[in-house]
Image (cartoon, rainbow, N blue to C red; front, top):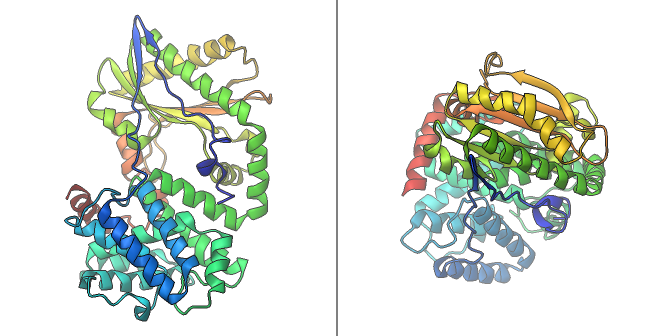
Length: 443
């Protein structure tokens, strides 16, 4: 996908920060994600071969290639265990659902008797979701109705949601045109114009599936879908911002080194053990270690083209003035430790590290204490320390500091940005969704 520039090309991707500094009075260590398997288990491979044969008989090899991309996206988004065997019935049915998701007519499904009734129920829900995606008006209420309908097996609904999330990660204009050109009844998506793609694919992706993926902790899927959707909705601006970002890669690398310097100095100055990780999902592994002498830090090396563009529009500022091109979140045990970190970053850290790196242009521009003054409606709590820069040598960065309790509330509770404001899973139905999701993921 040419437009998802920073999820595919290692040549243009900022290096992931890795901290290994050890100081006499402070210690910094990094949690590195376990590398995902690139291959599939024999059980999944046999299903892939069966699907290839079926698509070949239908003369739809291009659609088969697309389904395989969706399957790989499902593994990347952690929706599917690539090492699952036949005893893992949920993974087997999810793999089948993904492989055949492009066929919305029962007549095109392989009639080999190996699909359970649950598969066909889930397939019917998939078609229902396709209809909802293209519906006019308020979609969220229809999704809530589906979730609260006791006649629907929530496992089937989750499979349909996950298939749509993985599908949205791989859709782009070339594949859409290929699918449309196949002229086969039931191929999804069949959109005859760019405007239809914007309305029927990009809008649901951004307003429904992005929040669902974000809620489920599928950060990679969330960011890819957001970039895809923003690309569709504003293709010219997206390409322009992407070109601009490519020209700022050296500055972005320097900003990330600046953040690493902040963390290292904070560890030394406050005598802390600092555990860092590349994102919120991985940093959660450090939560049990947070205490009087230990904090956790989640790093965000780059916001993403879609994120920059959306924030630029929301704040009505140029892209270069978006305050969180990259950033970090410090998670502390309590409020005293939180304000110790805030005071260090504000009064000493930012200025000292900028001076050491000879970055005269970077400076503090705003400190927002939402811990003391929670945001209305969502009750979001954190302290935000924003920087600005007037030179090409750097990009703005943001430091967020909050307690573990505030973090869990912001990342998982009612204060979560997208999940609270946009997701259809917002009240009693959310509890049902999360309970069933926990059962599935722990089985």
